[in-house]
Length: 434
Image 1 (tube, rainbow, N blue to C red):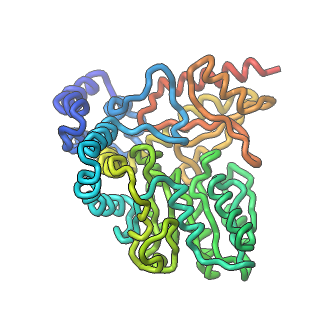
Image 2: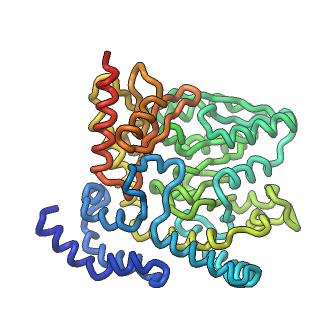
């Protein structure tokens, strides 16, 4: 974008950006106003818009991230936009004016509209969505709720998330089910290899396959639908861990072929910390036992999975603001921007001697999450160097056959931030070139 175009763009948005961002909850239409102004960019394809820094400037200004460090560990948990924070704080204050009244008679009345809004962006029925606190709670509802008996087999991967692995191990220990492990060589750009890795493990005794949509350790995207189709052809149920995929890139939950799907909303949707979602295919609800007991464990009502007791309604209801912000950007724009950011820093470092990239740069196999390592060094050494010398916050990964530093930008990340990252990786590699 030229300097004159940039000035024109700033002038067009000046009437809505500062006032609405600062007003937060007092002007709940701020995102719609900004979205209206951003229609000037309707002619831009998501791919073209991904590199328009003037467009993303206004997204970045909607966050309150610390200027004293560069947070590139959004894969752990992402910050919420300002309006989500403001909503949560307001609902919290309201709750404390008369908790039992405002929580149960006022805020709790917003759950059904919220369910519908979540279902809209998930592409499924509202009656298939239960609001949870995180992906672990959602997925453990499925893991512990599916009826299995001793000798039944469950196929899962050594690259799955530890909480899910431990949940399945507990069922193995207590009930005598058999866990069948697969292990993948990653990164991979071969969907047939990834599909076959699971399909070859299926037997007549296989009842469930557990799939991680995007591997949290290195950002590998799995061909979940292809694996699910192979599983369903043999009568196998499919549990999908979508902790890192939901609101990250463009898909609908039903398109995955999942029978059960769990995710955290405090990652890529940008909702408050402690919010999640469980999807259960409509015909599967009746026979899935709830993790927390309900009046009728065999009911076909998705709400039986929400019997948590007293819960933080102020966090739950702020999810609505995160949905507004997410839809203001648009999932296709968001996906392309996140892919652009990952590939931007990888392009800068991939040719440096001893630097090894551990994530595909192709859209089909990766998006925002990327893994990098330097030969002859440990992940913790690079992680510590980046933070001590460049104030870049990342995370060292050593899990099974995956080793490196995970780098995860988000929509508020700037190219200047990633230039600093690339300089830090280059400096570290140079220090260890002998």
